[in-house]
View (cartoon, rainbow, N blue to C red):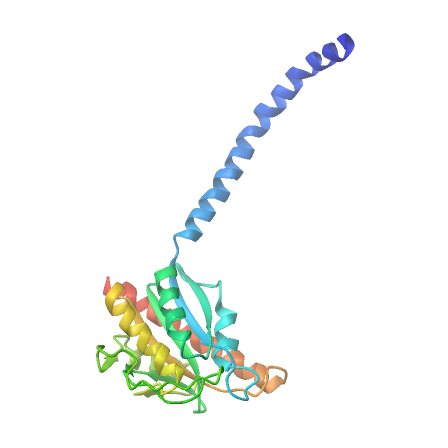
Length: 245
């Protein structure tokens, strides 16, 4: 025991010197990691949503494109992607919950449309389509929100985005409606909820063309172009926020 204590005592100065040498390095590393976490946590968030497959479709092009942007950055802004169900009972609540959770500076909702290109929808209407969802549920209500506004119009500068997409050789157009299915339902919920909790937040709905699968080279090429389109749109919306400050 005495021999062990003597040996330990002889090594203490060496350990102490090593500790003094390494402590600044360890402290700096710890502080840098903390700073990075703090910086990431305080990124402004752009919320993107897409839908699960519906009907006989095996994939939904909206989610296939949106999910590839999840966790990426547009300048100083961070993209968060949320998958929405094609169900009347859950989709609206999940849309509102996502807004409350992430408190985004912009909301870009994406759905699968019937046109061959990207469609920038100018607003949403307070109407419910009596179409069965993925659970087989068919709503009977006439309005999405009984006492809500008849319609909402986006404050996003659609024409500016349209030009950017056209310049990038991406086929695009504007549309007045996002239909009468879950696309319009979620779109309306987004506008109405933001009007209550964050009226300055920009929101817009995008329809993208459908794809049959994700396995062919042609499908992968289409998805890649949709991702590019959403990047252009997200960057443009983020720029509009900066100019509005």
